[in-house]
Length: 372
Ligand code: G6P
Image (cartoon, rainbow, N blue to C red; front, side, top):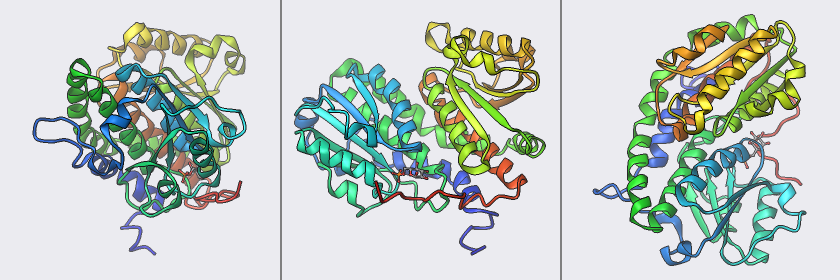
């Protein structure tokens, strides 16, 4: 078993370190020499995809958070309205879909019953279905009209890590492809984003090399009772995912919030010593979101929170209000989730280890939930 883990203590540790490959392999072969996207294996036609006027993601757990990240990006790049539905909610909510709706399921295993039933329901309603999936030959891609495989390799640890990054990557490839189909102005953007995406694996690698302080923090925070996570825009689902990882692995009460919601409720939870992770948008994020999140940090710090701030290299504005600054390499705002989530995964893994828990097989959870 030690050999299967490639020298790592746990599968999760190994899979976290495979993330640069998961992203790179999911991008592999998607562009021609001129940088244009070509999706050969997708099993549908350009004509069909050009008709899409609405997208609904269906997924569960971590995969649903990948859909939430993708919503921001795909709406921005394509101007096609995107919804994200938890698969078990979608099925029973009388969803509005028609022949021009693309229902995109996201599933690592391809066997999650709730997601499968949502896909079948969407087909019955006449929607076009596309599966983003990590497992060849699994049921969901077989039951879908089209498929876009993630190439993260087998994921063994129950808590998803590399599949999540691969799912975001595949969603972005899909979004950029749809943007390209919509015409030349969008096509230029698509090329530029694809080019930047190709550089992300190297940045993840670099980031993984600077996790020592995060591991130390996890060790001395092992007796935390509750941890909060704040993020905004694409950083919001990252906050939700950070909280989910901590619940799943370390059995700690953890909540993620949209940073703008703080004053509408969650700020009441802040008391001296309360740890709060804050995912800070890059300084060049539109609409002053960087400044707004920095002032959130200031507000909670003034009430005694321990502010654990995830910020880009060179972002000095966070320094005065941060108890700890965790640095991620610079990138454009839409790509930041692929980096910002990594320290949160590492934190949850090491906090659970510090508590002596089985990180690969957390209590009560299954890797693939094949019952409703
Ligand atoms: C389970 C796992 C989660 C996973 C979810 C969806 O609940 O514990 O880690 O995110 O299923 O799995 P899927 O295989 O459909 O991506």
